[in-house]
Length: 310
Ligand SMILES: O=C(CO)COP(=O)(O)O
Ligand SMILES: O=C[C@H](O)COP(=O)(O)O
Ligand SMILES: [Zn+2]
Ligand SMILES: [Zn+2]
Image (cartoon, rainbow, N blue to C red; front, side, top):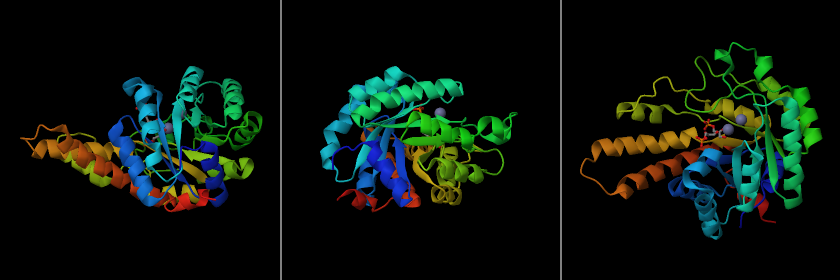
């Protein structure tokens, strides 16, 4: 199956109540690991790049690789721009064949977010490209001086935002944060808020900052020379509940990084004579593939490629 619009993925996941994995990549190793894993699981998937990924590799490389390999895969997948902070990047992504974009004006005023998101939707709608936007701020609320009301999504405002912009998917801030240090104390997602947003909008919802930050990787990294003590993520049970309550796309980047780096650190520490990068990168890539498969099963999207073959 060729690249598909994110619209198709969002619609089906919303209709059938499951979540599609969205995984970030910056290079060939991650891209191949993600697509191979999704193919083996027969799961639809979003492969996504941030602006900093584009800065790192160049969009020609990132999009070029995707377009070069797309026909090798039978699963439906979308090439998505993650956290597009500038309209220029949205246009760049469109020119390079991205089939889905996120316009992230969540750190600007509500009115500005509304205006720019609406503009992006007007462009993308004509091209059949899906648009994701974000409301609220992705900070771990417990270590904020500000109150939950100030940083988390306001469900009534979410409804108005969705109605006025015509977006395909919304990322509501419900207490998760990006990176390996999400919570100081107990993980706490605001499920009541999530439920309300779903009830009021009915739209496909996206969970950012969803990585599990699994102990095995954190321990291995610390054991072989790293120092990420105190790293903590979203427990699998919480994530499952979020999916049950209406999350349809789950963004994971940190877990892939942890899987990759833990293997790399281990091998670099143990294999002192090896200088062929592939001897390190191949097992690290396998580790990424394993975590992607595990996450796909957790969201309930394994085998769901079937739904798209009509
Ligand atoms: O939200 C993300 C990318 O947009 C990634 O979140 P994690 O840092 O939890 O993997
Ligand atoms: O927001 C998502 C990422 O986890 C951060 O990615 P980045 O380092 O490519 O900007
Ligand atoms: Zn954001
Ligand atoms: Zn994110």
